[in-house]
Structures are given as C-alpha cells and as structure tokens.
Length: 176
Image 1 (cartoon, rainbow, N blue to C red):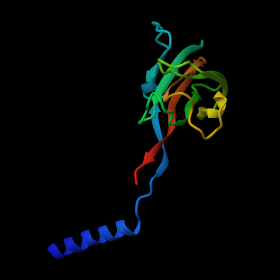
Image 2: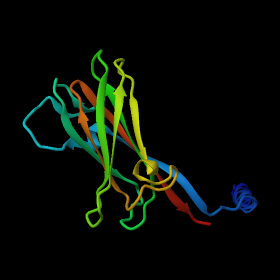
Image 3: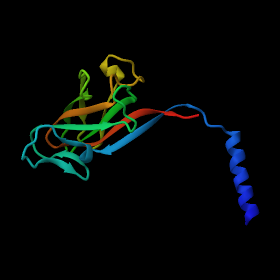
Image 4: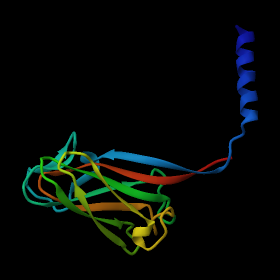
C-alpha cells in the first residue's frame, strides 16, 4: 500500500514538472437567473411583474422598468475586468416583442456612462441575448468595459416578456 501511494505521489510530481503552470489572463463567466438579479426599478404594488423560478417576468400587458445588476467575481472599483455583459430576454406568449435596455456603470464615485440597445424578442419563447461590450461605450470590442466593474442593465420590459438570465464575462489573472 505504501509503495502504491509513493508511486502515485511521484507520478503527480513528475506530471506537474512536465507541464508548468503559465501566468496569464483567462476569461470566466458569471451566470445568474433573472429572478435573482433583477427587480423593479420603481417599486410598485403591481403583482404582474415579479421574480419567478423561470426569470424576472412581466406577466401584465403594459411595460415596466426592471433593473438587473451583477459584478465580476474579482471586481475592483479602479480597474475594469468585465469584457461584456449580456441579458437573455424571452416572450411569454405567441407575439414578438421589442425590449429596450440600457447598460450603465454604477460606481458611486464615477461619471455614469450609458448605452441603449433594442432587442427583437421572438414569439416562440426562444431566448434573445442582448450583449454590451466596450465598443458600445466608445472603446474597442475585446477590451474591458470602461471605468469600473459595477454595471447594471435597465430594461423597459414589454408586457408578456421576461428576463431569463444575465451573464458577465470577465478576466482574471492566473498566477505562474
């Protein structure tokens, strides 16, 4: 038994030496369900817009503003690491929708910057993904979003539509 354990440890050590770790940067993704990360941007007693197990849903017939926020797992107020933020939208019935969403950096000591996009949400319930990256804020796609890692997306959520999820793509430095 001791010999087998010794051989196993030696094999792990040799394998590690043959493939040393490389320092660098890697992409990671943080995913969250819409019902968890979204809320009404203006509180109301309207119960047709609410968090559910399938997302943040507007089951009513009129539009409502919903705000969704997430940060990268390694957020810092002075250095941006988020490459892009995305929101998944879907229809609750058999009619297509147009949903308008605005992304904004939300660091309290910074100057807000905004970008607004419209999404055509299909009638079949399939998720339409709306993505914001640095090019939406005057930068270059692939670069981090400017100013900070505190971002949110506010959507004018059409009646009978929902926010299914939110995804943040960010970078982390890997040690050597």
